[in-house]
Image (tube, rainbow, N blue to C red):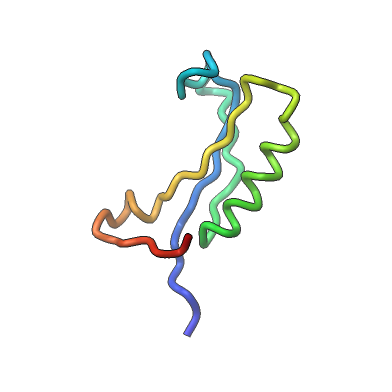
Length: 78
């Protein structure tokens, strides 16, 4: 039986200030993609983080969307 899909989203963009998690311009936030598990999302996150390493204000995030869809779900995958 295949593993249960655990939806993860990867998003990112430029922050107003590196000490806070507020995007400078929400219309410019990049939706990197939706992934079926943390491992796949982490690969995409890492690629984007490495590609923007020279921009101190660029940050990418993994959103555990499956927890938002089903808050009772317990995630033991990492």
